[in-house]
Length: 208
Image (cartoon, rainbow, N blue to C red; front, side, top):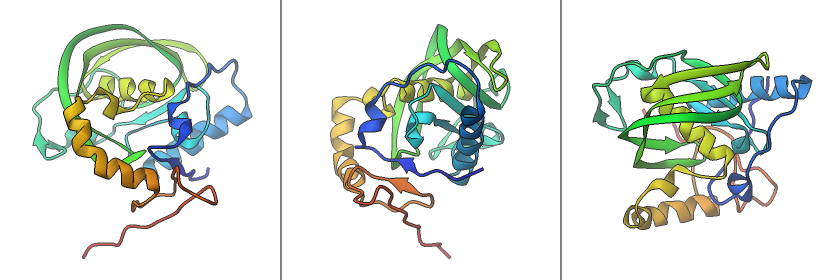
């Protein structure tokens, strides 16, 4: 397994639409393993292939432990745990139904240190191929549903900030401009739109 650099806001690949996977092969298996390694190294709970520069419709998710936290972005939540597994591989995911709505603060590994309130469906049914490339249907809600929708957005070239109001996006503009210029510190390898050598690796200073 390898830790891949994550592409940052401003890079063209994040606005590209990923293409369906036609069959399981060794390169896909490697991609899935590398994506899990990359996501966990960055302390993320979801990652889309486009975020590591691969235009295949592949998502990995691991929300193990995340739902046990009492706080999400400094806001306490009292929601029930999601129905369904906590670790998932979704290949060619398609949302078949959405029900109800709820709002929660979101962040993104491709947009470090930026968060915003996003309204999404509370319950969804999604059809996809799993890690064995078998067709699967899952109905789930809460955090898992939100992460799935967030990552499917990535496969379609949509970022969570696109769901924010114009006013809220304006407030975030200074941070977004810095990210686009590569003026950002992360604990994981990244590729910014301004990277001259393709990858910019910066480490956050460890706070005592």
